[in-house]
Amino acid sequence: MKARRTKMKIYIDILRSIQKDRGKLKKTHIVHKANLTHSRLENYMDFLLSEGFVKRDKKGREIFFILTDKGREFLGEINKLKKISEAFGVPF
Image 1 (tube, rainbow, N blue to C red):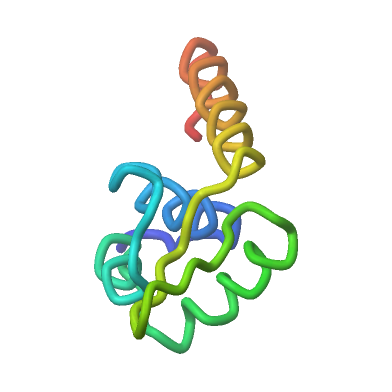
Image 2: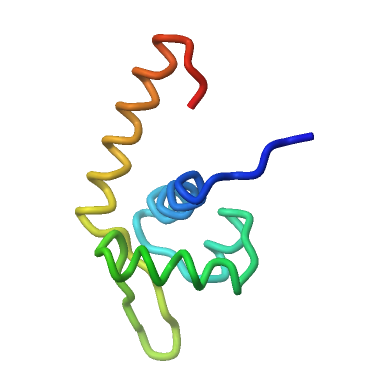
């Protein structure tokens, strides 16, 4: 049986899903790419918005979530940590 994702892994999955789509993504697309329900995504997005990792952008009736510089920097540091972890044979 596969282990559940940690909160940190879910935050990373959300940020990476936005990053992979040119840094801008609609909520429905985040739900699918990060494998979450809409209600679960709300809780995680509230945190990411309040901490400045993403920002909301409204174009007419459409709402997009945009990765901020802080979010990009965080993912860069996570990637460094992952490489170090793998170099020492420690699962990330």
